[in-house]
Length: 225
Image (cartoon, rainbow, N blue to C red):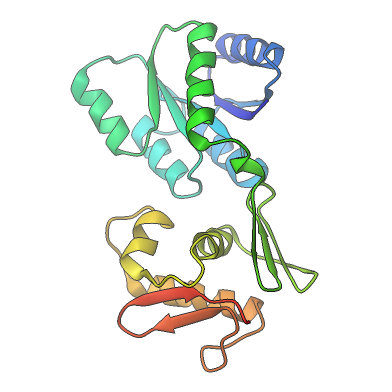
């Protein structure tokens, strides 16, 4: 079973897909617009997203770009276009897979299963532990010394990325690419988020506990021993 989010404006298609996937034991949520989809992603952390590109509120590629700014969850794009250039453009924009309309529910279910296999068994329930810090990736929760830490979406993503690489210095460019999903940007944005994250972890740059900045290189999570 997986948590699947369907973003599709046609209510008949939406209900048919939801009914089929529910019968296959998936937990399905559905919305009809891109903006509602983005809200669902941030609140319920689906494991697979099926994104129709013909939505009423946003262009498909714009919706995909916004989706990639808030999640790394696999996105299967449903498109009416089958031209190779269009497919390449969507994959480069952040799609993990695509289906050309019309498609069968059986075909969609197979693509969802393929994405779940790539994610690996148990990946959605993994918990990162570092010293007194626990990061629950599935619940998107962080606990420090037994107390919950209230984090924004981006703060959590940053902490989870560093927490998965303890003792490894991660460059600002890598953080920009993998956490912010941007090929370029302002290093100050990262510095500000690191500063906010430090404050919530009860530390400062002068007296770090978990987050250490390596001047001119990047940031690493180095739990106290």
